[in-house]
Image (cartoon, rainbow, N blue to C red):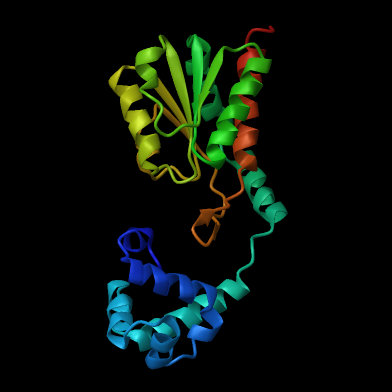
Length: 242
């Protein structure tokens, strides 16, 4: 109901209204516009302009959406992680993941350095992937700063392993574009194969699990990413143990 791009342009008065509504949602849902105006010490016209700025015809429509959002918020439940993982591992048995993993290992094996990239939760997993590969004697580096200077210019003969649930994060896409510009290889792990990052990658490994959002936060399980990172690392290491 309150997109960031709209909230970021609120005036002081609009921010005051926004904060009051957030702190008193259950109360505001049943107020008349005049009652809200008295409570917040603004004019009724200001409230109407505020709701129109958010894309509603007026205060009445805004209240309807506020009630709906509150109802959905109360009913929101997360998916059962065990069921999600059972579906994932069942698919790994049916799909030819080994072919994709082997192609990724071919690229990693030829590189002198593996650079792991991710933002937010994916950034934590990038750090984990870097450490796990290092444990198995591969030279690695990780980037979880979205504004890190172009890695492709700094590292010779490197492959970038990019982690992103959506494959559409602008800073991640920019890193991938820079990597391709300087001739480096890209391996991406995303939740589907239909995204911009997958299209920029030499190898894309999708894991296809139910995507989950709590408010604006993506809480899609990342256990499949751990599985795929460890599988790639072990396959890379085992090639040299024959």
